[in-house]
Amino acid sequence: SSPAPRHLHPFPPRRSSDLDGDRYGTGVAAEIITGKYSYHTPIYRQQDMFAGSGWTPGRSTLLNILTAAAFVIEPLIAHFKRAVLADDIIGTDDTHVTLILPETIPKPEPNDPKSQRAHEVLSKAITEKRRSVMARMWAYRGITVPLNVFDFTVSRHRDGPEIMLADYRGVLQAD
Figure 1 (cartoon, rainbow, N blue to C red):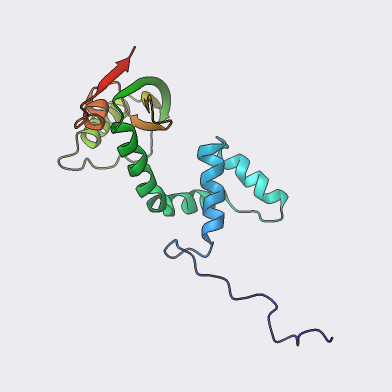
Figure 2: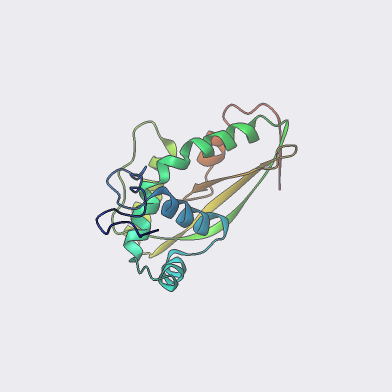
């Protein structure tokens, strides 16, 4: 049999991306998300890993793809949260993380206490000429639901847990 003529491409046309305005497919976004959140691989290391296969994306490209894909996983995160909050008993704990201050602080969103708290804490830190703040990562896990749900806050103030647990009617275990 003779090979296909050169003008006929041997592969089917590439599926358009699920990410608005992005030229990369969802497989690339899935790889970046999985690397960052499942395997805890920082973007600069992912950049090196991709380069090993011949693709040399900039860090900003990888971060842009990650940001553009956020809407794709929001329903999954909401489902996990509902599942954990449906459990009769939830365990929670927080750990401190260093948050390097951004160059610009986002404006607080009306009716969003976490957004307002973030603006307040970050503004104060900038006024004090600090380069970082000690933020918190809260973990929530159901006893019978084997899922972890994480919530980030810029301080240990009650805003985060108060919002997360606003409709919870079970037992909360914490240290």
